[in-house]
Length: 360
Length: 136
Image 1: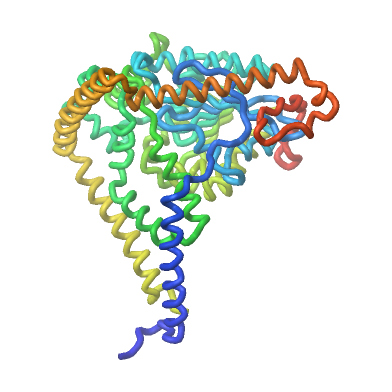
Image 2 (image 1 turned 30 degrees about the vertical axis):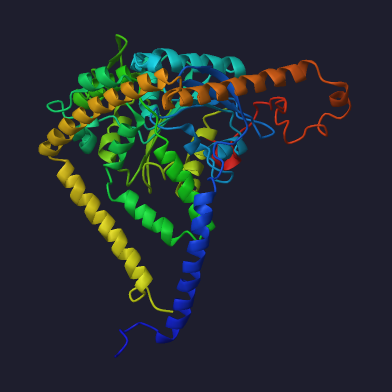
C-alpha cells in the first residue's frame, strides 16, 4: 500500500512510541488529577476593607516602591467570583497591576443570603458602589478613583458613573460590557417575555440558583464542555495544561446565585425593555444618561465573545459623553480577554499604557 | 515527522474542533427559535417550582433531624471566612499597636509561615509617573 503523499513512514514508530508514553502518563496523571486539589487561586495578599452581606471590598497590598496617585476600584460581575482576575502568580491581573504601580481595590461578591433576595439594582448602584468608593477614598487619602468594571460589573459601573457624573470617578474602564441587550440573542430568546415568567420564578425561588445561571451560560455553547473534557484527557500528561484547565474550570463552575429582585429588574428593564440602549433606564427613580459620563473612557471587547457578542457591546462607546474615549477590540473570548496567556500579551499591557498616563 | 495534513492526531484534533463548532452553531440556531424558548421555559418553570418545593421539603426534613442544610453550611463557611478575615485584621492592628519585646528586637525574623498575619508595609508614596514614552 502506498503512503499518502507527505506522510513520512519513518516517523511512525517514533510517533507510536510518543503516543504510548502519553497514554501511560495519562493513566498516572489521571489518578493524580482525581486525588489532588487544584491550584490555590486568589492568593495575592489582600486586606478585607469592608464586608456587608453579599458585598466585599478588598485592598490588595501594594508591592511597588511608588504607586500612581489614583487608586483603582474593580467592580466584579455579580454572577462570578473575582479570583478570575487573580489566578496564580504570573497569571494574575491583580499582581500585574500591583507590579505596574497601581493601588488596587476590588468590589467582589459572595452568594446573597435568602434575606438578601430583595436587593435590587439600586442597592448595587446607589449603595454598594458609592459606599465602597467612599471607603477607598478614606483608605487611600485620594479623592479620585479609577473604576474598572468586568461584564455586568461594567454595567453597574456605567450606571454609577452616569448617576454620579460629578462624583469622584476619574477614569472608567469597561471590559466586555453589554449595552444593547437585544443583541444578546440567545439570552434574549431564553428570557422571551411571552414564555418566561420571571415573576413566578423569582417569587418561587427567592434568589436565582447558581445552577440556573451556569446552565444558561453553558447552553450558549452546549458542545464545549464535552469537548474540553476530551481535551483535558488528551492533555492530562501536560501539567501546565491541567493547571490552566483546573483554574478556568473551577472559576467557570463557581457561579453565584443572583438576588431575586435584582434578577427580575435585569430581566424586565434590560432584557425585555432594553432601557440602557433606549436611554430610558432609571435606577431607584434616578434617570441614567450615559452621555453624562465625561471622564476618560476605555471599552475593551473580545472578538469572539459568545456571552456578550460584539454587537451588544458596540454602541457603548458612542453613548458615552467623554471626548477622551476609546474602544479596543482584542482577540479572544469573554474570559480569555481578561485572564490567561491571551490577556497577558494583549489586554493587560494595553490597559497599563492607557491608564498609567491618566492616573497621576 | 508527518505534516499536519497527514498526522492522525492533528486530524483528530481538527475533527474534534470542527464537530464542536458545528454542534454549537446548530444548537445555537435551534435555540434561537421561539418554540425553543417556549418549551424551555415551560420545562424550566415546572422544574424550578419542583426544585424549590423539594428544597423546602429537604430543609424541613433536615431541620426536623436537627441537621444543617447545604445552603446553611455554605453560608456558615462564608461567615467563618469573614470572621477569620476580621480576626486577621484585629491581630494585625494589635501587633502594630503593641509589639512584643521580641518583635521590637527583630520583627521580621519572628514571623513563621503559620503567623501569616504580617503587618502591612507602610504605604508607598503616590508619586509614580508613567514610563517616559507613554506620557502625553
